[in-house]
Amino acid sequence: MTPPEIDPIQYDLTAALNQGAGLQPQQFEALIPRLEAARSEVLKDVELLRSPEKIPAEKEPLDARFIDFPAGLLAEYAASRTDSTVGKILAASERLAQTVDLVVVIGIGGSYLGAQSLFKACCHPFHNELSRERRRGRPRIHFAGYNLDNDATQDLLEFLRGESSKDPAFRWGIVVVSKSGGTLEPTLAFRHFFSALRESCGGDAGLLRRLVIPITGLSGELRRIAVGLGCESVFEVPDQIGGRFSILTACGLVPAAILGVDIVKLLEGARFMTEQFRRLNVRENPVLGYAGVCHLAEVHLGAEIRVMSVWCGALETLGYWYDQLLSESLGKDGRGATPLTTVNTRDLHSRGQQHQQGRHDKLITNVFVTRDRRAPLPIGTVSPDIGDLNKLAAKTMGDATHAALLGTNQAYRDAQRPTADLRLPRVDEASMGQVYQMLMLATCVEGRIIGVNPYGQPGVENYKRNMRSILGY
Image (cartoon, rainbow, N blue to C red; front, side, top):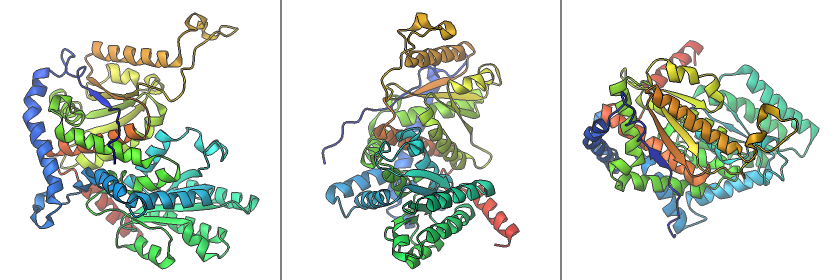
């Protein structure tokens, strides 16, 4: 397979290191040996997985398989299109997409946030409102099982039953994602949606088996149900990859492929980022640069809140995915910054004041796109001259967004607020693959720097046990 041409994303840390009372270049220089050591440790973690008996107790759990997983999937796909995991995902996703009008993705945390992020980033913003033709023949998609929401669950069930009663030809399906099959929120949702789907199939067990795609571990309740039902397609949540690191496994790839997202390009972007992480020096390395600035801002400036400030609505759910990644990975042992996602310019009118003149406890990372999908929308000339903007007729909405970004950064510089920029050439699969892999790698690097295991989620497990005990479950 010929290596793809990848347009790289860019992380610019210069603003964060040149803000007077902010971070200083020499502080970053002093951190370089620790960043290099953390990179080596993160990469050695992958080697440790090949000899599980050698993994020291303090490194358990060690869910580092995500690092080389995209490259492995691509190599397998190059060797065998049809028998590879990617080939099977593409075939199963295409079968379901051509059979149903709507898919419900059931999962919680990393089992759905990645898929939702890909949906928002790579599909039309009004995908579900478009006709089937304008959706390029792809089904509508809804998410469930990510919350214990009585009303939302019943409303979606009512909607599905209503569509089925109006149109006997209406078909819908389920993608259910749970490694253990025992997490309460998606389990409850699956009980109800599976029952409704069985009802809509009118007793046709063969049809039902084709309309449910489970993604789960090799054992557990969901695996048992999938085997008992005889589901036509069942995919594995790989061992040694935790939920919040699973976006580039079947957990994210199956829903994305159903929607027509190019999952091969997504994996190619991720593989490219891992290669950059391995070979680039610290100053040019987006993973190490990001991890270094985040760590220094917390240590030297008390920036315990990390604002992912996205300048494109399509990236809002990328921020929510990252919120979980950072919180569950580094929020341990009394450590860990608090993530916050904002969308600009929208949130400049709600949080901008606080970020500029409130507490000095924030690092702001602007995430923006250098090339829009659509041609520039001119301000143009209208009558009457609404907003007195006819004098800017030759300017575009993109020009206004860029002016807002530059003006906001200038205001932050004047107030000595640390900022950095993460630039995507465009919002597409290759760029998103790079971003996901960069942020996952950077989180692991930072964990190794501060001595916190970035894998596992002991606090979440405590809440699950308590909830089960209270329910008598």
